[in-house]
Length: 326
Ligand code: G3H
Ligand code: 13P
Ligand code: ZN
Image 1 (cartoon, helix red, strand yellow):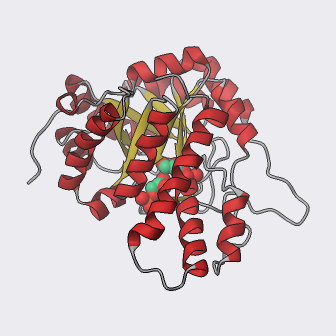
Image 2 (cartoon, protein in one colour):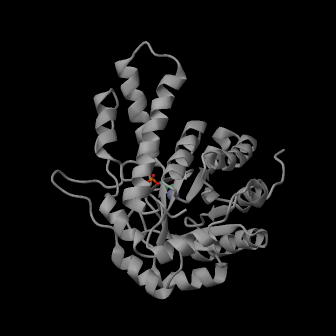
Image 3 (tube, rainbow, N blue to C red):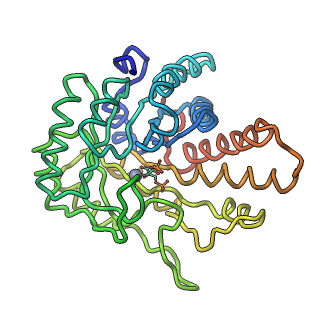
């Protein structure tokens, strides 16, 4: 059994103050997913070096993969690691796409400072009911809660959808009021994974639906908005993967300019997972191809970690604007 622990004892923070500052400052907090030690080390190192606040995201699948008890200790460890590196950056530990009250409760009880309850696949009323139940458990413990309205195409853990259903602006005010959530994930054209848009030859990526975002902002001014599925699927990594034996055709993501534009709005949390997976895979493929005799994991996971650090620093400095905001 995992030990009951409050995130405050671990030195973590919830997302409330992070979002307030990000909204006022016109930038977004990076929410990077991790599943293993090297990814976690890279995220913390990049955010310490660029002095950025950060949200560490764990999906239900990641929690199962990495072991929930180990994760609890890893979360405590990163705070000490950041301090040892000389920076006391704000770090939140967040459950990504929680799908049941039991899972969210277990995360709150084991040191998470922020929770997403994703009821977007449910009916509107069922979504409200579940989200409210999570908020009522989390808030007395000062844990912040993210809800979701609208459906993203692609895979969200075990939930998958072929098509996206944009968030309906006329629902947001009622949803926020009745659930009392702290932030809201919306659907304005992004999707999860490395294949976000199906393009015909010569076609470019369609812009995100900033018109819907504006409508939402009008109805809930200043309320923290979250963008999922925000990887850019950087072409350099796709090229490297394909060059060194991989096969990822037609992989395409959200252009960085679109994300930069979003950070100037009420979007104050941007979720990125796939870009980390791609950077790591590309580097490991290159090393395996160039040094077929290499069999020490440190010799390929180490360079993959270095590449991740570079990529996350680029995001913080050039895309999200969170660098120097810790
Ligand atoms: O939104 C989904 C995240 O990228 C997590 O993915 O469920 O495969 O860990 P996962
Ligand atoms: P990407 O697949 O675009 O990285 O999105 C990640 C995400 O939304 C995690 O919740
Ligand atoms: Zn997501």
